Length: 116
Image (cartoon, rainbow, N blue to C red; front, side):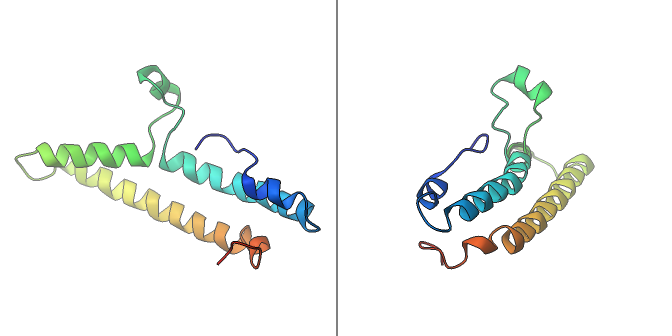
């Protein structure tokens, strides 16, 4: 996705009575979601050199782990099991972060057009 940008919802809100409040809420929501996205997927790492300063995200690590598992003729190593445990814990933590965002930053959008 990339760095936070002003999306269609923020542009639409600008012309309404609640526009300034919704725009501020949209910025707060983006500011909270962006770090979660960054942990899940690393969009900045474009080449091997980029991986040095921008380590791969959880999605890439899971893909690599699955690839190793597909190619193996033996049971997973202790290191592979530990990596899966670590990635599972990180995903669980990010899920909890996302739940907190949903409870706090999503509230201003309740009842706005297009929301369910």
